[in-house]
Image (cartoon, rainbow, N blue to C red; front, side, top):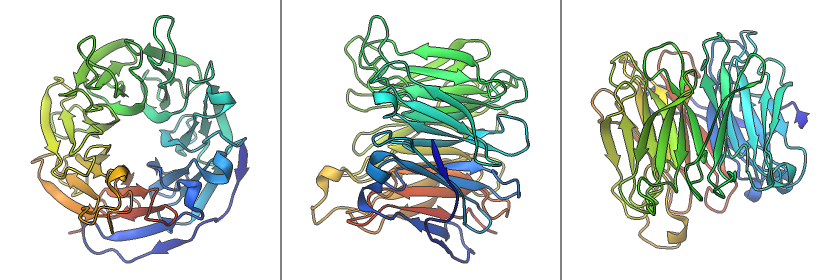
Length: 417
């Protein structure tokens, strides 16, 4: 992996006074870089008490790919990481990794599903100095290992944060493209847990995330999406699965409503949305007009369904959580509704949107819209932590197709009193 440090993109710092105020905007350098295709909270990689963010651009440099880390306090570039070879698609997935090595600096994980001839790879990187800590590789071409990556929290209770990697193209002995996920120890890099999809074509591991501590046992769980799975033999509603890593067992299975919903396209821990002492999960779809469901981590029951309203948007195609946007003690969720690209050119297209919903009331706290029907605003969303250290959770939002221009990433502030 080639590593370059320095500022490659300009940051625009704007004053922040109101909820949802634009704080930073970064723009890509080339149309095909896919800058902003994926964004994530990076936690605090430089240990300055301000949350940072990481942005992937898997199309950069003939799909060699790139990931850029920005610090929250000033919006400057902290690290830039690049793939090893053209076609690696390094930066296709990015996430914080927590503090995997116990040095008090938060670390990072980046996926490159095109590496090694399509077998894929994932890289755990030190937030402190940008040096590689662990490198993991897929087993066979087509596995697309690293298609999804995430922090896994402290899944085994050793006080070191762990990571999870998805390989949706993985073939089991009985089923092609069933999919596979692996949870790795942050302490020593060893495998803690593995799981496979149930049947051919499920694409289990298409999305992965830390679910938080869903059962209040002091061990974190993981949530995995399989958007082509189904409860019945021929159903393709999509599914999502919560696993107890420490206990090595499945906690819950959730399925979509109808064939083609692609339920599990996006998954995320939602934090403790209902303030019952256990973390919850949110699962998104890729169907028009779309929906996302919030589930109780403690009981596995549906808490709420958030529904899209426009037939040209994929509401629920991106979801995020672990955000206390209004500092009320309840975790909020953020949901993206990008526009169907095949509909572009229509004169009556709506602007894509991102909405923040209260965990307490499920009501809308904030709606942000794209500029036109020709962008991809809302295609990727995440909590940004607290980038300005004001006590309110903030947002980082990606738009990898900003009209005919290179992609962009925006950071919006949480609610200010």
